[in-house]
Image (cartoon, rainbow, N blue to C red):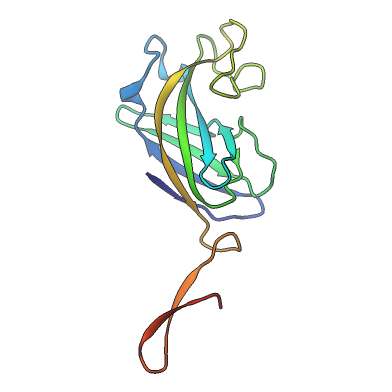
Length: 166
């Protein structure tokens, strides 16, 4: 399970996670420069599904780094990795390998939007090869109104109780 803590700003917050994908690589006929990963996020509470390609991707021998952007507005964009992780809490993720024969370009015409999207056959179009990773992600905001925060305050007699709110 991964835990992400982001700072919600007017422009959103960015976070990076490391995951193992190379040991499950499907299309070994192309170089890593022709590989991208489509991540499907499903909220555990309201079952909302969001797709995103990482904005920064680093593929190494033992792990892959992926950077996503928390969009504090409803303007989610799978091509620029903008995801609104509200409500906070548990999100399931599935990572799908997408490969290109030609130049890797993320546009609405060349990058599959979901794991079931099939684009016309062309070197410039990405092809979803399959599932290479899955798990659970816990997203939390350190401040704000989206989650209840609990503070421990000592009672005058010295016994500690947990009070809710301010």
